[in-house]
Image 1 (cartoon, one colour):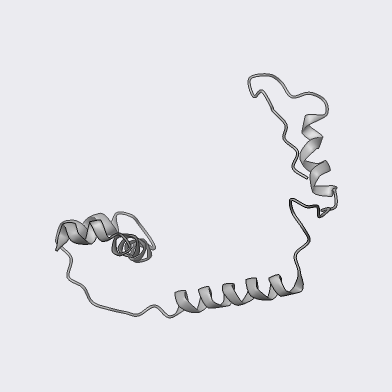
Image 2 (cartoon, one colour):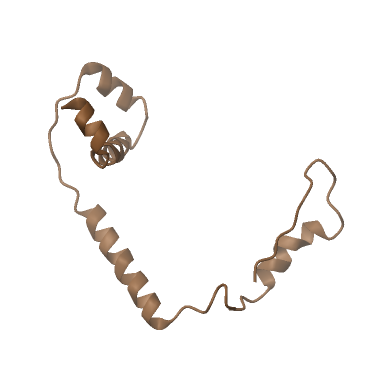
Length: 104
C-alpha cells in the first residue's frame, strides 16, 4: 500500500515528522495487490538478467580510435573514468539513427 504525505518544507517539522523515516524502516514490508510478494521464479529470472548484464559489461573490447586534439582534451577534462563516459556517449549516439545519418 502506498502512503503519500505532503510536507511543506517552508514550515518547521511537526513532532511526528522526524520519526517517520525510522518508523517506515522499522515497519515490515506487507505485500498487497499493488505490490505482491516476489516469487522464487521471479528472483531466478532477475538473477539471470543481472548475471547477463554483468557479463556484457565485463567483456568490453579494447580498440584504438583516432580523436581530434580538441575531442581528446574535452574527454580527459571529464576526469577519471573518461573512457567509460566516452563509451556511454558512443552507445547512446549509435542507438539513434538520426545522429548516425547526420554524420554519414
